[in-house]
Every structure is written in C-alpha cells, then in structure tokens.
Length: 358
Image (cartoon, rainbow, N blue to C red):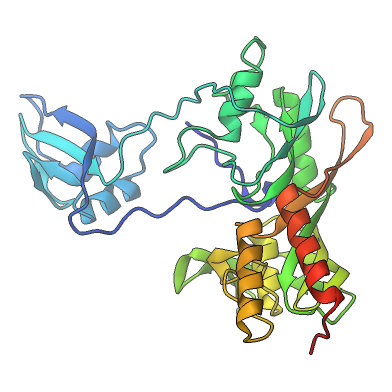
C-alpha cells in the first residue's frame, strides 16, 4: 500500500489525474468473488467491506453508486442482498495496479548521499511517485534501482523513502530518507516548518512590490477539481503562507524568489495567481496564454518560442536546508537553474534589452 503523506509534510504535489468520464469507458475487473452456498442474505456493500482489504464502506458505496459493483454481470445498488452462488465483481474504469515499486534503471542527479539520507535534483517532467497513469518511470522507481543492493532499504516500505514531493513539471531538490528514524526526524522538521526551501519562479506581469507575503487558505477549486484555489472563507481550506522577493523585472515577466512557510498542494502556483501573477507557461492555471505584452505578431511569435523553450511551468526548487537527523549538522543545498529556465530567462533579457516596454 503506497503511503499518502500528510499535506503539511509535502511541498507542491501533482494531483492524481482524474478518471475519464466517458459514458462508454472500458471497465476493468479489480475484484471477483463467488458467494458461498451457505451464505446468509447480506447487503452487498457490507459483504464486500468484509472481504476487500483496505476498502472503506463509504468507498464501496460510492463505487456501487457509480455502477462499478456488479452481480451476475449487472450493476446493483448498495442495498442489494447477496445470495448464494452470486458472482460479484468490482469493475473500475482504469486497469488494476498492484502497488509494488519495481526498480527501474533511471538516471539520478544525486547532490548528496550518506547511509541515512540522500538529496537529489529532480529534472522537470519526472513524476515523483507512482499513481494513476504513472505506474512506471518515476523517481521512486529510480530510487528503488539505486538502492537495490542495500539490504536495509525496501522501496515498498512507507517508513523509508520520500519525505516530501514536488510536481512532475517542477524541477529541483528533494530529500530522501534511507532509514525509518531518518524519515521520522526529517518529517517532523517539515511539519514544524524548520526546513529552508527557496524556489525560483518566472511569473507573468511586473510584480511592483520588491517583496511581500501572501496569506490565503488553499482548497480544491469547486469549479475545477484539478485546480487549487485561495478560499475567501477563512474557515475553508488549509492555512498557507508564501513569502516572495523580486529578483529581476523583465518587461512583461518577473523573476521572483519564493520561500515556503507552509507546503500545500500547488501553493506557489496558486498564491502567485491570486496576486495576479500566474507562473509562466503554467497550463493548469492559465499561464500558457499570452497574458501580458503587445498585440504584434512578432511578440506573439517570441512568446510562443519561449513556451517551446520551457514547455512547463517555470518553477524550480532551488535550495533546501535541514538538520541532519543523525549528526545534527545543518545541511544546506543549492541547485543550478535548469537549462530550460535559464534559456527562457535569457530570451526575455535579450528581448527587452533594446526595447522600450510600455
């Protein structure tokens, strides 16, 4: 069973992709059972709850309501009474996946490593953890391969491994625990907000204040479940704080440094959008549109070239600091700006150097 870390101990996590909603989507069998001859009458949801490991009754009832629980090939309601020799199947609109982490020989950019932990610099495009639609080719699979000869490291043990995560299309530093004690210690540091994390982001528009703090509870956007949003009601969502500082103003975009005080899903991306500065090329939040600048065709061509240069949200987890869980030493790591973001920023510098920006 893959462990889900508390939101408080995570950085920006990419949400699991939504299941397709096509009415005629193909269904895959996840569970099948033939009811015993001597089985007494029992509601199908209770029957399945007693037989499917790690499935709550609520989830079973939801699956039933969606038409995924079938008896003798036909969908039934939760109130259906199971009868002897009934064939019960649970169908889902995605293939079954066993949560075993398979070691895969994927290159790792290891910044630091000892017998207790390691720090890696994740490239953009690499999914951190297996999930729906990304069962292979992830950072966790790469770590399993890297430590396949370490008898004390089990990639399928949730007590070791990732301490925090970043989005698939965000690049930068992550710390991985090799022992249960190291993971507990590091997890507490993230929970208590004593770690030091700085990001670099290129955002649309000119950020006028040299520095500032964004405070706003984050929750799922009720209008779009794939997005997070700042909630106007202070009782809704999770408390989130982002500090930012302007590093460079580049005409129609601004390079900023963001410091996370909390670590919520999509926190930087949502907070910057909230103050009117969507991350450059952040498709989920509208940054893949030309939001600032002129209407000239040459400008549009330039921006589209920029999108091609950095085909993802321009966000990099640049620094990571924490206390070593065993030695007590203050550890601090910095990673270079990735090539795509470096070239993107240089393009904007070059563009504005001989132009007068309105």
